[in-house]
Image 1 (tube, protein in one colour):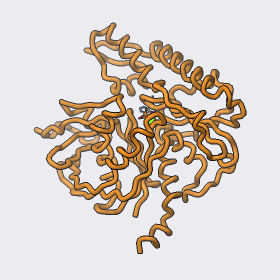
Image 2 (cartoon, protein in one colour; image 1 turned 90 degrees about the vertical axis):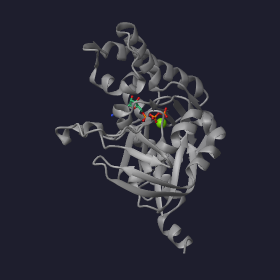
Image 3 (cartoon, helix red, strand yellow; image 1 turned 180 degrees about the horizontal axis):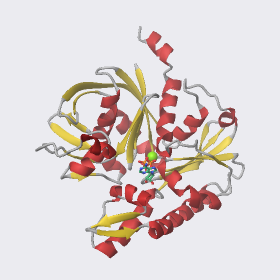
Length: 347
Ligand SMILES: Nc1ncnc2c1ncn2[C@@H]1O[C@H](COP(=O)(O)OP(=O)(O)OP(=O)(O)O)[C@@H](O)[C@H]1O
Ligand SMILES: [Mg+2]
């Protein structure tokens, strides 16, 4: 039995088994037949990450950065229903298959944004909890058959991933006392959603927990609209990460500076997040501290910090904030299904 944390985000799909992890853009596309191997220097393909191709039943897909770069028809979505009905199965299989031995019984903890939890929890569980035969195609064209056997699934409110990541140690046991005894706020800023949650001595507070649309894609939409005005080209949102990071983008031979646009868009998004937080937590002035999570919180931090009056718990230096939730899901999985006990119970 193996425990996995799985986070199918609107921006990125992440999975971890506690030792290693996978992360790739939540993009799915048609697999193209490789007509010829067009890399002169095989090492030069490295920035794209590994080749991700998976066949499920009759359909073969490129996934993540491979789909972004090579699929003719490719899709991504900012709609929860669509993410689940059209993409989640392929994204989950593509993330999990390279991580696990074929046929190994798996137990998976995953999350949903708070506002979708009630409506989609059972659907997501049913979608994941099954046996599935898939084939991975590697960069050199070789194939590998895998059976993915997910025997148990637990779905929790997304921001609790970050909370459990702080609260539990690598054996799934509570270790950081303040996370157990204090009243904490969690702000998880993802690509599409911002989720706010309160844990009062580990108890989930309904009143203080809510999802909103204040994800990074709002800022990216503003940037993309301005680029469309300037260049006439509609840039897909998921192609903006690297450009925003770099501070510029080249469209049809012309380079556009993004630093001012990004600053304005991020400042306005941070203002929105802080307004939402202050409104939602107006009665919770007794919060001890606030935990930040999600890739967006890393990007927004410089703008957000001056606007929030709470004690912010720092993210560990060098840690990718996109992975905080999934690491917490994994630890919570160990907490639910401790490895020794699980081995005994299957005897
Ligand atoms: N190395 C990186 N590459 C791309 N984006 C990054 C990177 N580091 C941080 N980011 C930020 O992370 C954000 C995505 O965060 P995250 O993976 O937490 O979102 P998500 O979980 O997919 O979205 P949601 O929670 O809305 O479903 C991007 O919008 C970007 O601002
Ligand atoms: Mg997320």
